[in-house]
Length: 281
Image 1 (cartoon, rainbow, N blue to C red):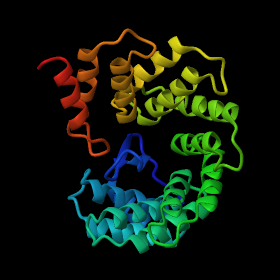
Image 2: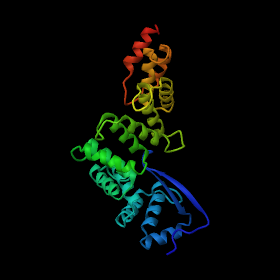
Image 3: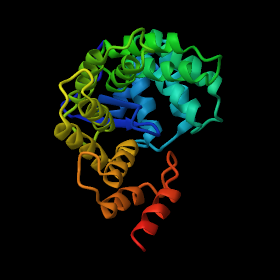
Image 4: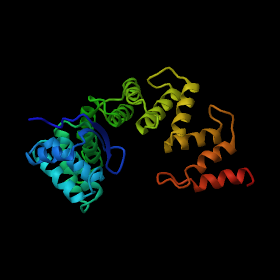
């Protein structure tokens, strides 16, 4: 059967709610062909058509129709559709949030071999989002996903080797994994790139798994801070406040702390107050 043949192809990046869920689709622009093949039962056509309905590209946006097509595609073995259903139920767009259903879809897609799903499933296992937390099993899934070079799983596995939760403490292995995550994409506006850069920088500063190189470590952490990694921004603030590796500079420290004023992860009000008092502001 002819599948999605056309002279004109386009690439659509479908991002469901966050950058973790991204599918790159090459599809025929002839919607009639796509509809016909979907009606014939082709799961890939159902997935692509559902994606167009979901994002409202070339078709009127229709979440319910998209979800229906994703379910049909998933039942016929399209793992990407299964994963997207997990995201939809986790975030509640077009449906009520249902973490139990989301978890089951993540699990199904993880066992189906999709590295993004394996990463999400591992996170939920570790956090105990739906069932009792199973951190050991979660780490095994991070390993499986890392074998497919999925950057976020590489980072989680590297952190596991740093703290020993991956089965042993192995800084050299952590360095290798951070480097793989850092090199995984050329796009420098990529959070896995900047996060792995931050963690590598910390290891260079301490000389763990690598030859100690404070200059390189500081450069990496500064780069991650410039890439909006909250932990890196906080670390740079402390470095300048304490005068570690650099000349002490409270004004620069205040600038870094100020970047975190509206950050949900860190409360820096006391830090800002302390620095402003020291500077007589």
